[in-house]
Amino acid sequence: MVNLKAGTRPPWVGLGAAVWVQIASGNAYNFPLYSHSLKSVLGFNQHQLTMLGVANDVGENVGLIPGIACNKFPPWVILLIGALACFFGYGVLWLALTSKVQSLPYWLLCLALCVATNSSAWLSTAVLVTNMRNFPLSRGTVAGVLKGYGGISAAVFTEIYSTLLHNSSSKLLMFLALGIPVLCFIVMYFVRACTPASGEDSSEHAHFLFTQGALIVLGLYVLTTTILNHIFHFSAPVSNTFLVIMVVLLMAPFAIPIKMTFHRMRVSKPEMHHQPVETPDSVIQEDNADKTEPLLKSSSSTTALGSFRENVEASEVAMLLAEGEGAVKKKRRPKRGEDFRFTEALIKADFWLLFFVYFVGVGSGVTVLNNLAQIGIAQGVHDTTILLSLFSFCNFVGRLGGGIVSEHFVRLLHSFLIG
Image (tube, rainbow, N blue to C red; front, side, top):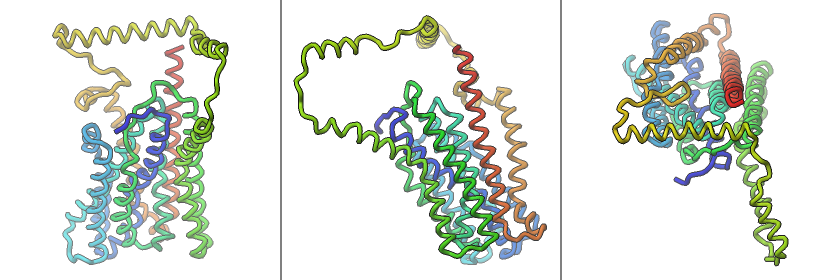
């Protein structure tokens, strides 16, 4: 694999491909769209349907194995495993719902749903880890953007479910079993690790603002079209037009590498056809003088900061040499902000605080999501697409806002420490 610096086209192509994978990783949010069909066709009671929802949640949120595998295998392997989990898990559910296979045991359906939704952990882990490594100076922004697309995925699937699949639960399960693996195979080549840039790219902030703006427009568009379609019942050509526009909005992040491609062509084109011109010696001397003379002289604070970093790096190198020679037996434990192994994280209070907050915050959301169809039916709303779109939109706003806010405070703290 060729090493590429961050800020060039390949990392942004990978981010655009990751957007589609994140949409696919929201397959677990589709449970309210077909849960009522499972209950009616297979004759399940409310308790059995609730246990299926538990299996859905366990598969979606258990990501320990994908996290370990992501540090040992390239991203395409993780995506392949997620695609296979989707194919086999949702394939079994489709066979049961369409009665292609009679009398499948209940425990097998729970296992199939758990495996199917566990694909979301494999898919999201692959793209999140890869892109956060490709953009190390904007990790919060990358996480917020990708998790935002994952949050809005339920509304995207709702649009596909109502327009393309005509509110058919069996067609939705077939779409999940076949469509997501095909998508993973298409984008597998583009989701790959690149060598991050050593400095901060001036255009990176503008590119992320464009991506966030496109995500906000997509969220508002999907929510609006879903509500309008539910109220006015548009004809098939109009609904299909709405679907095509949604796909175009999903392609928006690819505008960044396309813009880089055309910008590079405009810059390099005159150089390909120019004729050699003799340059006077005086011009050459002036040009060499400009290259040797720096445009900006470093300030005293910058010099002091550089010497401080050099001293820190020298001490770290000396520590590594001492450890290698056996003079130091006990290695330094990682500090806050550095990479932790799983066993090292287990003894940290920060880990358990984050675990508790995540457990409480996400647990309440998935409880509502699993019973969203039953809540709607109890209120006389048999079409759960509106409720799921609203849930997805609020989920997307929270995820995107969390990434933006966290990145703002991280940069503010970084500026405070340096200044």
